[in-house]
Image (cartoon, rainbow, N blue to C red; front, side, top):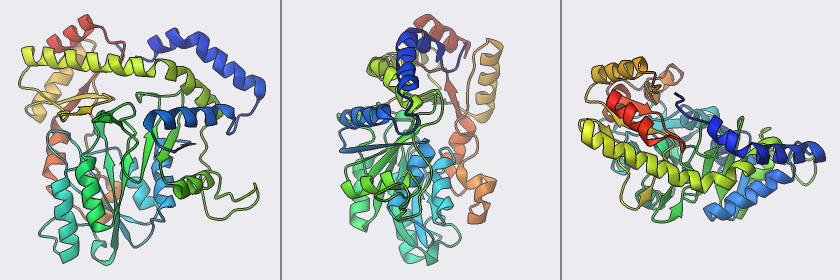
Amino acid sequence: MDFIDLKSQQHRLRPLLEERIGAVLDHGQYILGPEVQELETTLAQYVGTRHAIGCASGTDALLMLLMALDVGPGHLVLTTPFTFIATAEVIAFLGAVPVFVDIDPETFNLDPDKVRLALEALKRGDRSLHPLPHGALTASVRGIIAVDLFGVPADYAELETIAHEEGLFVLEDAAQSFGASVHGVPACRFGHGAATSFFPAKPLGGYGDGGMCFTNDDAMAEKLRSLRVHGQGSHRYEHVRLGVNSRLDTLQAAILLAKWTVFQEECRRRQDVAARYIALLEEIRPDLVVQRVPQGVVSAWAQFSLLAPSPEERDAMRKRLQKAGIPTAVYYPVPLHRQPAFAYLGYRVGDFPVSEDLAGRIVSLPMHPHLEPEVQEHIVQSL
């Protein structure tokens, strides 16, 4: 059994994939070819933003957004410790300091109340109010990066209110949430800019790395297009700023355009798969807690994650499923404040209890649009 079944989709789309790839081979514009612009236009229209800028990965998309906002040394950016390292890595890479804030125990996303508490602690210089990293009291807060974990958009209504009150930016890490929405507003339309990923396992994934930035800010979009090509100015050999080499490959754009033809149908199928899991779990394992999707929110269900009653039961469940030939995954076993790469920040065990608790109890089940009902029944029975 596959944790994520990419083969079924490829079999269905093979003729169109070959046609799209063949067109790129015919015209030979492998860097920023016409398919890249076609994909950018298509996805910007879907999300409802004025601009979409393709790049080499979801990580680069976040990095470029921060660069466009001139984040650097002496700056603080608030974010969650319960996510993949890329979210905080890009902050540190630019010389800024990540300030971790704990998550909501039900949605697994950044907790706005704790964001307010962290900001108050920074204003007062009082670490007793909220854990703060080394160097925080001599730097200025610039913004917030919220993560739409496992496909559930963060609470942008509250986060954007806080940001407006404090004069901060908000960025949406939508690496897992392309296809999600909040009261009909698509993911990638929130905050000052958003970043998504086209890693193969994502809801809209290519056959290699790729990413995209979204924004309604014309000046930011112009800067992002420059940043992805070494800070290029009006021509190839004019560089108006320091940038990166981060372009979405034309071949990946062609593959994504082929996959786009079934994307919205696959999103609906993911909803059906998730609803079936939830119904089966309520009947067979009501002690397992599924990630909460708030009212009015549609999750992209990049992962189907649940919480076991204890770390011991989580490990026992995984062994039972493995014995039955069923793969599982743990996202994320080590919160970012406990990663060796961030030891210099000085955080300690116990600083973010919700994230630490979830890391010990969380497990993800196979999740993809081609999961058959009888297979789901077998998975849940095996729990």
